[in-house]
Length: 428
Image 1 (cartoon, helix red, strand yellow):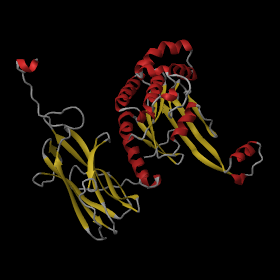
Image 2: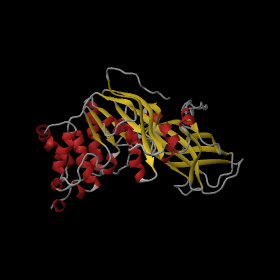
Image 3: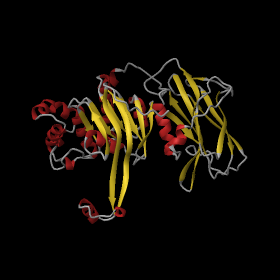
Image 4: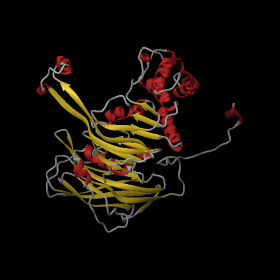
C-alpha cells in the first residue's frame, strides 16, 4: 500500500527530497543564548525531529491531502514547502507561484486593517501594488466582511479573519494553493463557498496541498493522500486506502501493523468483500455478518423506504467490561454516510465473559438514495477511559439501494408534498 514517490520528473511541480526538520528544546531560556554562542554542552539540549527524511513528488494539477495525528509534522511540512521555515537537511523544489493559507494569523499584521493586510499579504506573495489593486474588489467580494475590512484585524472574529485570509489566498491566481486546516474555522456557508472554489481550481489545473482533519473533505476533493506519522511518511496512495490506514493509527495500531492489516476473509455471499480490512487487539472477533430484509432473508439490495436489518455475530475471546457493537455505511468513495452503535442507542452496556457469543441486530427503514454502499462492522470499548478496538471489519459488505426516484444529497427526507391554489382571501 505504501508508495513513496520520489523520483524527479519534469511535470512535477513540487519535489521534496529527504526533508528533515529538527527543533532544539532548552530547559531554560538562557540556554538558548548560550547555545547560540557555542557555550552549551550537548546534554542541556533536547533535539526533536518534527520531520525525518520525508520524500515525495506532486505532479502539476494534482490535489494532495496530507493527514496525520496532531504533532505528526503536517504544518511543519507546509511551512518548509512555502519557505516559512528552513530545513535542517534535505531539499524542497517548488516550480510555481504559491499561495498559502496556513494557521490563523500567518502573514497578517494584527495592527493593520483588512485592506492594508490584503496589500501586505499580496506583496509577500510576490505581487506588485498595481496587481493587488486589480484583484482587490474580487478579494473583498469573496471575503464579504463589509465595513470590518477598514478595522484592525485584531478586532476580527476567527470566522471573519479566515474569510479575508482565504479570499486573499485564492484571488491572487496561484499555480499552487496550500491550505492548512484553516477552513474549519469559517461558518458552514463560507466553507461551502470555499470548497466550490476548490472545484474551480481543480478544473483549472491548479495544484492543491490540503491538510485537514475533515476526512470527508479529504475523500471528496483529493486525488491522492499522504499519511504522516511521527515525522515520517507512512503511506501514500488513494484517499480510501490512506484514510483506512489513518483510522488504524488513531486507535493505536502501529503504521507497520496497519499497513499489513489486510487479510482475506471469505463469505458465502456475492456481496462479501474478499479483501476486507480486518484489525483489532483480539479481545473479540466478528464471525458473521449480513443484511436481511423484513422477512429475515439475507439480501444484497434493499428497496428505498423498506425495513431492513444489519446483523452481526461476535465471539468474545477475553472478558470485556462494556463492549460497543457498531456498524457504519460508506459510499463507494469511502465517505461515511451514517451508522450507529449500541452505546449511542443505549441498547447494551453489560459486561461479557470470554467464551460468550453475542448476536446483534440493527433494524431501520432505508432512506438512503439509490446506489451502491459499503457496510463496516466494529466491536470497541473503553478501558480506564482509553478507547479500544477489539475487532473491526471495514467495507465488509456491499449493499445496493434500489430507488425509483433520487432526491438531492445522500438521504431522501420522504417529504409529503402538496401544491394548492390559494383562495382570494389567502392571497391577500
